[in-house]
Image 1 (spheres, rainbow, N blue to C red):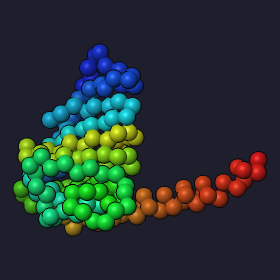
Image 2 (image 1 turned 180 degrees about the vertical axis):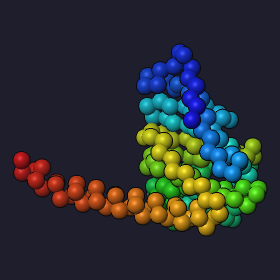
Image 3 (image 1 turned 90 degrees about the vertical axis):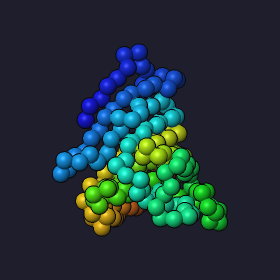
Length: 184
């Protein structure tokens, strides 16, 4: 991982500061995830990162009703925040699920999950690239290298189970400790 910083930046100030970060995952001499197209923008309530994807065969970003499984890469924007409403095309539903899988030109695949519960939107561009914009939290990416779509889904399912189990344990501990906190 290579990070380049602007000398005059303030990461935790009130301004939006720019950090360029190049992250490359290579397997079998092919590029997996490249963030060199745009800067990482990081401020208190705004995060943005752009990544180049190796093909236009992008699938995912659940909790939306999509016209097809394969996404249109012509500057389509998906807003994601939890909201309870009937299924409507291009609107968010019950939860935030920022996971995508990209089928590369050589039929290999990779997947990326951004674990962040804040409101966010993702823009699919014809470069082909994806831009993640989030109004807070952290950039917690899980990378699934596949190499086949089946393995990407298996890897994603395994991590999802572990995250759900960790969430249940945290929730139970918080719930069980609540009455004791009120007594003391």
